[in-house]
Image 1 (cartoon, rainbow, N blue to C red):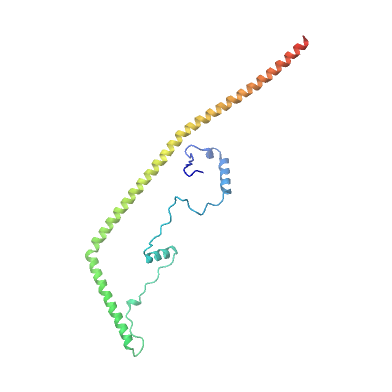
Image 2 (image 1 turned 180 degrees about the vertical axis):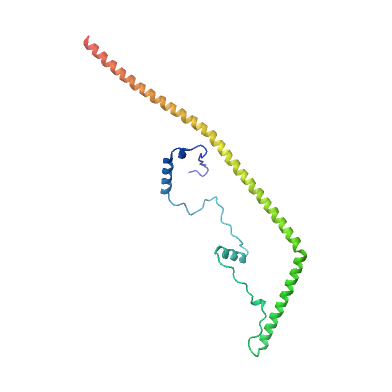
Length: 211
């Protein structure tokens, strides 16, 4: 089949399945006999989009959510200040504990700085972020509404076209039925005339024999 050929049904005109339920049963039986749909997608279907190709952390998180796995517990060890476990502790153990305490102190300073920045600029940044999200949402809603209007318009055009063509098909079908009926009437008239001619020929032959 030529790939440029477009096949379209006439759902707004063809109502044989509604008029004759037996046809619907036959169609369902034929569909049940059909094989399984192909596993490959249509060539026009775009390939699957790979999410977060440059961010392995987000990709791993997405895979975790798709697998319905629970969120891993937070690592709280780095927030603790463990003392050396051995008694007496060595210099290396005390040095490791001291370095951990310094790291914890620096972490708390950074958190305090971030909280100060958040209190100072966070509200405005959040308002700007919300404004951008609202603008994006309005744009997407407008695109969705335009697409719906295009879909409705396409369906309206298809309905009008099919109803217009359907009237022509009905007229042609009625004309075809009339022509077939006329042909049958002519054939019946020919048969009757042939029978009458044969009857007259026999009668003529009988009269000739009598004379």
